[in-house]
Amino acid sequence: MTDGTRTSVIARNQMGGPTIITSDPKSTYEVVFGGHGAPDGTDYQLIPREIIQTPQFEASLAKGILAVVEGEDDADVQAALAGQKAAFWERARRQDTAAREVLEAPSDNDMLALECIGPGTRADAACGIQVPVRAREAGLKAPLCSQHASLEDRCVKRGSGPWVLEG
Ligand SMILES: [Zn+2]
View 1 (tube, rainbow, N blue to C red):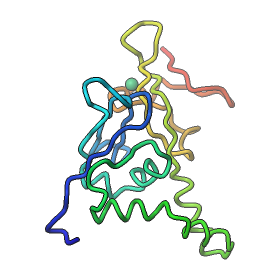
View 2 (view 1 turned 90 degrees about the vertical axis):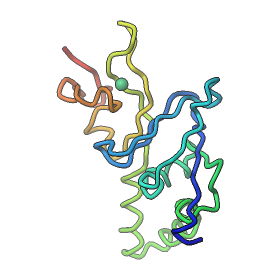
View 3 (view 1 turned 90 degrees about the horizontal axis):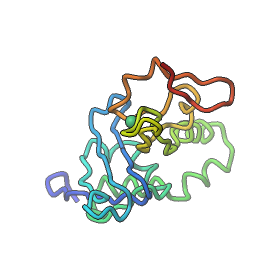
């Protein structure tokens, strides 16, 4: 497939709750999914090219957070799916230094789906929108959705305890 015949890519959220995928920490591109089976169909979303080409998208497919329902034969989607294939891990298992270096980069980028600790619509409940956070950053950065990202300075984590919003 050439660049001139790119198909649109639609993915479905496989998670029970809302899920957000962003192209970068600044949310330059962002897709918000409703929970799997949402009555309004928001669990299906068109995925922009800028997100398809990110490691986060590849990881969300590998982890089964998202599933591609249209555009599986798109070249970029194929590349993302190929990234899940065993060849990568086979190489790592051989334990040569080069493979180790390759292995460390994506595992740092492993995505966790954490719930936003920003204020929710009710006083006693947190926002709860699932935020993809890199495993490496989970202890460094509070889970906040794009709407609550500005509250970062009020988030505190003590020892191995959970992130809490103060103030
Ligand atoms: Zn939030």
